[in-house]
Image 1: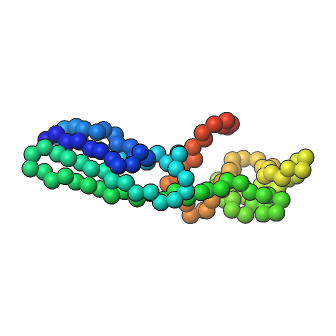
Image 2 (image 1 turned 90 degrees about the vertical axis):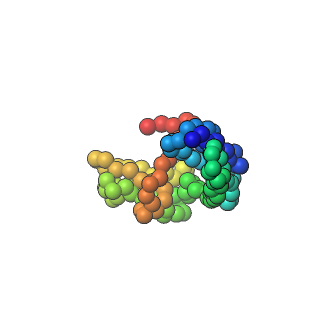
Image 3 (image 1 turned 180 degrees about the horizontal axis):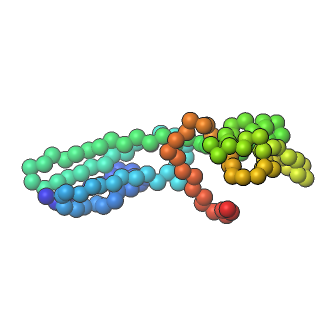
Amino acid sequence: MNWTASTTAAWLNLSASSGTAPYTLNVSVNSASLAAGTYSGTVTINATGNNPTQTISVSLTVTNVLLSTNFATQGMEGWVVSTLGLANDWSIVNIESQYTVQFSGGGNSQIYAGNSTWTDYALKCLSSCRA
């Protein structure tokens, strides 16, 4: 059985626009150019033979994650120490009138903006990344 697939939203990506069954069609989202808000789209799959057209509704909510903190007034509020530990080795320091977070301990540790209950997430560096 041959099939075709299409989408109504530019932010929805299909792994293929046509194929032969059996096939796993992957649908992904490109939210890079989307402003905060709720977006709707559909994925439509048509197959040859006596197979009805399948339409799948997709809803995407994009929220702003502001990775900016005024450490002088907020301290480390909103920042979480990783499960690697060493939380007491992080401090707020003033360097040339700029407040920043500094790690002064030994061993492995990291902090991230967010919530300790977050799971299954990724951070993508788009430009000017340093390790």
